[in-house]
Image 1 (tube, rainbow, N blue to C red):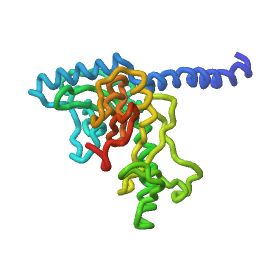
Image 2 (cartoon, helix red, strand yellow):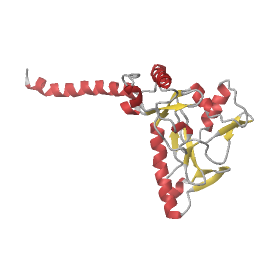
Image 3 (cartoon, one colour):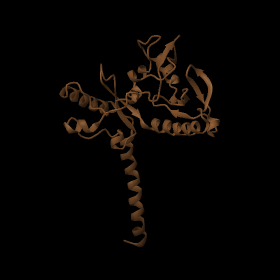
Image 4 (cartoon, rainbow, N blue to C red):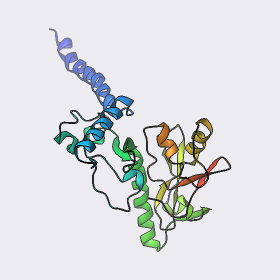
Length: 242
């Protein structure tokens, strides 16, 4: 082996590792697929049967918003050998998603919450909290609906309105504040699309957020209730629903 070959071997090893490792990570961080959801769903269903109706969930405060309230505790499923390897997309296995349950009392259904959304909202909430503590009121902008206000980004020293990546589309979704300064994501763009493109039973007064979970694996985290009015999504109530 000549000197040139000797020097190139470590570089080649690094390049090969760099090619293989991203693929491995990509597999872990990909969007949850139907097979993964069904695997966890079957484990949850069996657990509920064996535990007389109990669900394998972590305990959350009663005030926790509904789509974040019932995260699955995988250790409970593993204890009963109902689940072998955790989904590669799960947070517990290095992925970006937290597996949660919706309709826990009537039809426990496994969905996922994109934790990158959580990170974005929490980062904004910290800034809003700091501003509120120093000014005695939240950085409320223009009025949108009763109890719903734009976030005045200039008060936070931001050059433009903050936006959050939608898990449902290519849209960038705006955020807003309630009167207490809590940050929420505005899903009306996606709800409008799904109302127009899908058959649905939702009528005025009903919470249409479940339209998004009817057709996708994702929950609309950090949201308040919406309903439909004249075929378009509107805020349903003043305060965040549970």
